Image 1 (tube, rainbow, N blue to C red):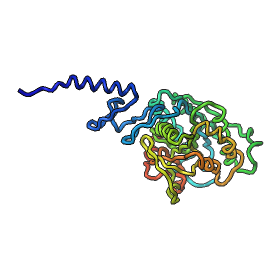
Image 2: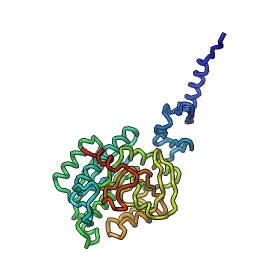
Image 3: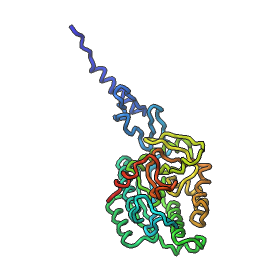
Length: 337
């Protein structure tokens, strides 16, 4: 007679062992079924637990030191200038307001996706605007209202900055500096763990913010210091033969870089620590304008994602524009109304 194996006892012991592992914080990997019984997930899903642990197969687990509880996303908008002090056309050849609207819509989508995944994080989307026509402001407010995300719209009074910013700049440059300065003051004076400064010509992928949050927590633990994350893999990063380092985020690789533009995510603590350095960008234009940021990167890591999490809609030939090996047209179409 064929012997029948008693699997009931085996299954019971397995369930008990899984519960025990969950209680003590251990994770089990079942390579035969390619899943994690303790997490109840397939291994190709997001295994990390926000604020608790970062899990990378096959490298294991990193216990997060500093949990992110709140994020302010500050979008600096100006629909009246196509490209500051330039006559060039942008990719897809639209009016400037279209890039602003699509940037904002892509941000609301990535914030919603992140908030659905991370229930404990408080998100706030702030739009700070200079010189946009009333009809464009109305459309911006409409997008904010329809998003159902905690939000705020601020029209900047440029006269408040006339005695602060050095005189002699073009209207567009002065406006840009004042907008950044105002965003910097918001970051300094309002509570949040992370601040994400965004220019109004960056179309984000839906998973961008979730990846950036998990990556920030992981790298903050690895480096044991505050850092800066960029959303874009810029073309200029491939024009220089520089040594770098590659790190694993959640779903992306991240590259250590020494330069950036002025769309970046960092901690409020870092902003307060280097406020006087960052304030220079709002007071006087240097060449490059981002030089104060680059000085900070000498002591605090700055990382850029591979592949890109957002595209910078500059001129097609700009080395500061469209990220390589990314479906820019798909991202553009996904940000339609």
